[in-house]
Image (cartoon, rainbow, N blue to C red; front, side, top):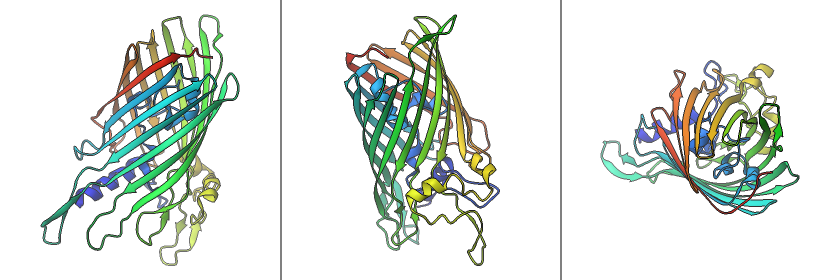
Length: 380
């Protein structure tokens, strides 16, 4: 049981925003939905909304699939999680995409988050069994090219969080929910800029839009991690073999910030009431922080990522992720590389923590495999 609650605390502190000096923590149900699944994005500061299409675009921006140069892609990912705490917690995912024609594509993916085996004991310390709490999401998306340079995608997602413990006096229950995504992606034509050619990219994704859920019987309902992702990038196409890409991305949870309340009466001192529906909560999240506009800005995370690719066979990547000290203080550098062997691609990444806040991916080398096959489409 102790291990179970340690894991939950570590997950919440690493994924959700929270304030260290003020009691205005932002937490959500099913925070695993925000975990970047693949090593390519993990090597570039966990970005992906405006990077070039790949097999794992489903998580960051499903609208990118229509710009893929392969008819079919498969992405396989496995990430050990909280390696410094335990050795049986992991995140894995499987993604498949199909580019139907030059103007449309669909994709589906499964993400599974295992919290390992939890040994249960009674008041006397005697073993009474074990549980394997886990979470998963199953989703599907469709993307359509609206012009030669812009596409949009929609997705629907089934979410299941099974933290229920089959013991007396446990009010944890299994949660089932549905959510939708709305995304857009821009990719310009390749143009000449003097000594090199270039291409602009941009994207957005409003993900996990869905109703609130209750994690306990009769308990308070929690928001799922509805999130706004915005980003842009530029490809420096130096010649036929060498390309350098630079990317910038912003993220914000579209979840209300809890107000500051009087400890005795419960009355709101600063901020707005967060007991609202999920639709109202999305709009309220842009202006309800107790600290005003300056605190709202702190609720945005930002990340920089760069990728150097040689002859579409080798890539070197680096990135940096930053979160306000009052909203989680996650700050880290990332490094990684990718290798392509015909239709198979291997990516790897490594995280270097740059803050005193523990990161669940410290001392962890991540790997991803992807496969591209079928007809080849020319990029626009």
